[in-house]
Length: 201
Image (cartoon, rainbow, N blue to C red; front, side, top):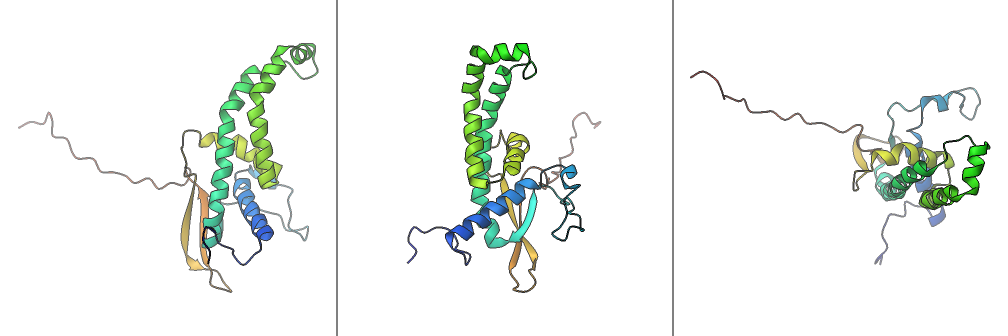
């Protein structure tokens, strides 16, 4: 019996499953990076260039994997989102002088740096926790700089899973996409009733 054993095993042991979810989450976050980052990237053969994704914030996988990785993605976004306010406070206390200059050295040796360090501590903690979860600094940087500020006012539900009609070749597995909400939302146009006020009778 599987009492209190949540989640799918997906035919893998725990270490393999953890690595799978980490790779899927990093792949989703890395789709948000700029197209310039793909300029000098090549496939394993060294000749075929890697193209940027056609739609940012979306990856395709199987339905079961998408449903399982969803909780990890939302947990990472929540951790990064909590650090956004602390990052704004730390930026306000940071030195305006260039690093290594006389003004910066004076700020570094005074109370200004201590206040900045105390304000920046939650940001550093969140960044270290995300790096321990995702093990990819590039994905963490994109998550904290681009994705988390987008969801500051959203209480939850940062992703959606959409089932695709076509099946995977080979084993006919159910394909699905997992994407970040907000960019590709369907906007339903509502009809407004005509107003007859002020019309001549």
